[in-house]
Length: 249
Image (cartoon, rainbow, N blue to C red; front, side, top):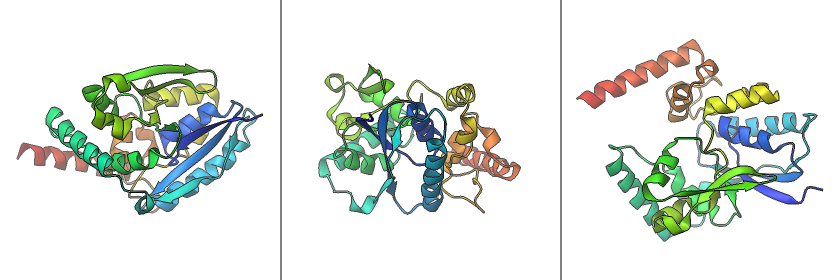
């Protein structure tokens, strides 16, 4: 009987797909969510989630129920002035403490969305920007669950109110993993082929990763260069060189 429902933000990307695969042998129900913000990659991401869902359902080890993807437009998320103000405070504080690093604008509307979803899982990886920020302005608390495994939540007693407003409604199940850790585990468990069908590029060219958008650059720098064509890797190197030249000016 699949009684417990796990709410997951699933983009069809590497991290969120790994989490879904981690849970497939549990007697649970997975409810995936996708937020539409008019990215060029939107159709590719949604199509990827749907095709991966069908593949995962057919795995011999799958016990979970995966519900149909629930997609919502970012423009339809209810406004919340307190969350927006807290995001702006964190964004500015993060820039000051980390030599100009920026907190992605998606964390503002994700926070507004998450306040209406029970225990929404956010698939951020080890040493990612949000984890660095959380450690600057608060603390995380480790939890252990028979079905969920190890995950983290925000320690609200030792975190700023701004941090609670923006990052306080999530479970974080992937903070102990790097992308290469996920690849190693996927190989061990026999589902790396599914992982290699994930999608992450925000600006695809001819249905191929561009190599120069933020998710592509993060994926390359995390050690997954094998996911890219030679052309995409060249674009990545040029983008890095241009950023270095701009920084030195």
